[in-house]
Length: 167
Image (cartoon, rainbow, N blue to C red; front, top):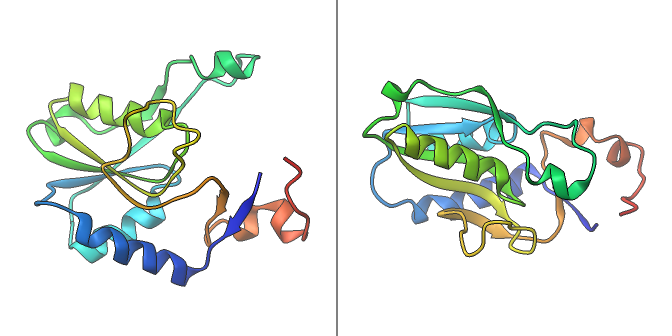
C-alpha cells in the first residue's frame, strides 16, 4: 500500500480546507479516540467550540478471518451520556474514513441517543468505504494511501527505521 507522510503544514491546510465547508453551528464536537483527538482539537480551536466529548470504540480482535472481522459489533469503551447529545448538533471527528466502520458506529450511536450527528475527517478513502453511498459530511481530502500524520511519525516503526511498506 502506498504511504503518504504529512507535515504539520499539510494538516493546517486540511483544517483550512474544512472550515469553509462547515454549515451552521455545532453544539459539541465528539472526537473519536485516538485518531480524532489531535485534528479535532485543532478544528475545535479554529471553530471556537468549547463543548468537547470523546468516544472510544473497539472491534473484537478474536475473530479469525478478515471477512468476519468486518461483521463484528463495535464495543463502546467510552461514550457520552445521552443527555449530553440529545437534541444537539454534534460534529463527529476522526482522522480518516477508510472502511467507515468506526465513525459510522459512532454516528449511529449519536442518532440513537437523540443527537444530530455530522461526520468530519481529514481523509476519506472511497475505495475502502463499506457504507456506500454514504460518505463523510465533511472531509479535507480523498486518498487511497496509508496516511502517516505528523503526530504518528515516531511511533511508526517502519517509517522511523527508513523501511517502506511491503503491502
